[in-house]
Length: 97
Image (cartoon, rainbow, N blue to C red; front, side):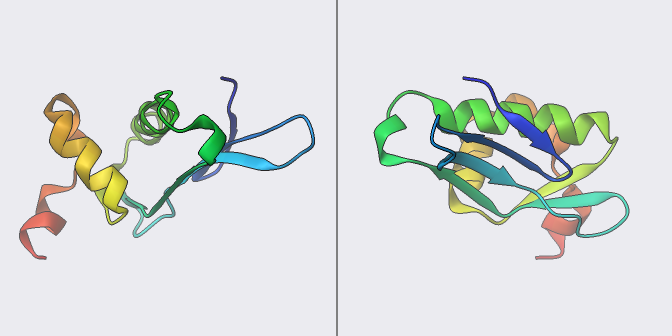
């Protein structure tokens, strides 16, 4: 699936322009973003699209040399299932929660 990348947002639309997948990660500070939202249309569920979005977000966040916190329930679970990406998480913020 081809994603469109914008500042702090990665998404896909179908041929009619309808949003079918999205992850957002707005800046929380100059060095940290908050992965606060993931969405996958019902028609794409079970195809690994949300995981692809998370990998694209990880790449984008790393490219900005930033850390992340995850407040989106899917993102929280994804980091728990994929501990090899835990170095991206802002441990200072996590400790202060």
